[in-house]
Length: 147
Image 1: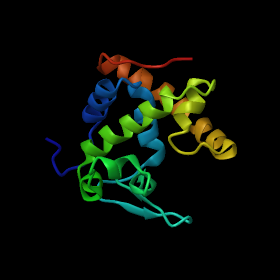
Image 2: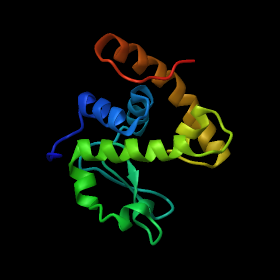
Image 3: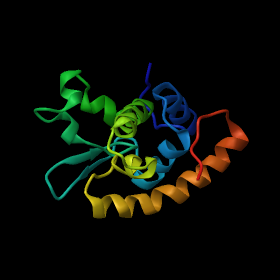
């Protein structure tokens, strides 16, 4: 189902729609993460970010949700649309958290729940989501968030 190739805007929009997340926010995350198909990026904490959405290997840790479901790191690395689907699923988990935080803080939790890191990410996320929202309105029928 998910071929070995980079993610496209179309498959990111489809993943957002399937997971019930705003496509403009998912595309903004993609822009910030700016990973590439097949890419592995080592982090200072010893974890690695994988592929297009830079999905962190922490999700495969002893308590990681991906470990429980047998999600293969090589598939996440090389199947761009699969990477997008998992990113959309992770975003859905963040957005569904009952934290009392606004949608932007919860969306930036995709990157970090640490307040200072979240704020830096959020500062990039909001304008990119607005820009992607305008693009999507002109091209697709999607769920989107606006200010």
